[in-house]
Length: 175
Image (cartoon, rainbow, N blue to C red; front, top):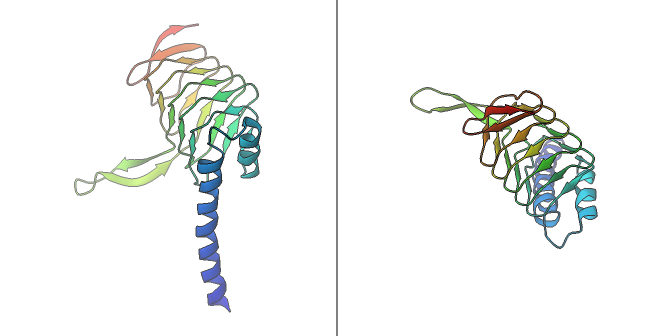
């Protein structure tokens, strides 16, 4: 009986992972799925979405959760890794094709440079504006009121009320 329970649990875990992926990334992300239903699906799956997630966004099916604050939106075709939590505050605007990467690797030995896997949460504080095609790396906090210019690679925490651009991101002006 114990062996059967273990096999069933393994099969169920695999199936629930597959089902979660279908709901999040095949049904909720469709253009024909109304925004309210999309939010309901995400919240039913354990996320905390109060804002709007536009169609064609990919939400990873790992252990991380998405928190999206009031009056915030994630535009079309964004990628959210969710190997760890992504916390987005109130009044945040995220342009299309933004990538949130929660996971990476330590630098390994010469035989295999992609070493041990690591992951960390990402936090976007209230009032930020994230431009198109921005990439945000693991463990980054984008401070309150920041603007991140299109195409920027954010590898480190930002200061409040700054405009950041470039690869890697650099402060060009305080607001």
